[in-house]
Image (cartoon, rainbow, N blue to C red; front, top):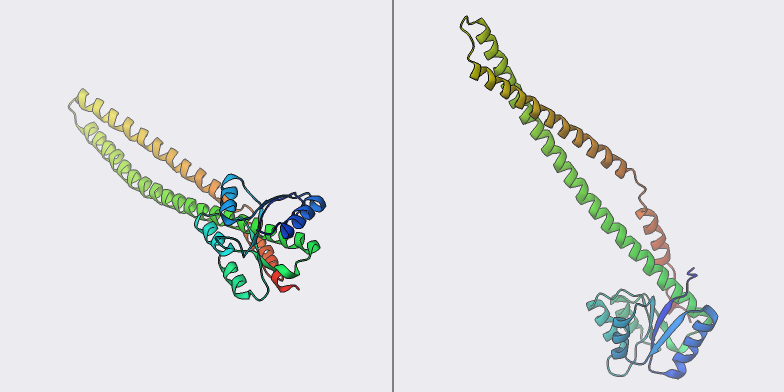
Length: 254
């Protein structure tokens, strides 16, 4: 059950209907309620301020509640909406739900003490859906990161293997050449000796670099393994969300 005070946008063109609802929610539950009487004013209000829940009448002057839902969807407004329909307007309710409404109520049979239940239920489901989307995005980011790490690891392995082979060949040739020169009686060429020394030094420097690269690869692997052990809340959130979605809709009450 939501315990925080909510900012609620009430869209209805009948003050005699809307004002008692606004007063009740404000006085009994300390919710902040903004009342507007048209879709045009509601659109301006949503653009001006963030709301936790929208309470929307289907029949409005000018554009209808359905038009508002279409506008909200096109403009990525994901605030949970509870739609108020007239008696026998089941088709309207179904269309509203398809457009993203969280719940619907029959205007002729609304009970004030039941409104907080509907509003809180819609808000709770919104919060869980939002958290679920964020977890999905985090999982996608982790998957991308995991792929990048795997590519990095395979690249390092291939690079190290190639360099190690080349280094081994260089060092082997240097040693063989030195052995051959040692067997010769003539004095070694000082320039050649110096060159061989530089080659050996460079080979060892490359070998040290490769060793550092291997160490970096091992560190990345360890960090990745630790990250994979982090607690995944997605399954628990999905279970809770399903329980909330399985609750009877407000429109099913009389």
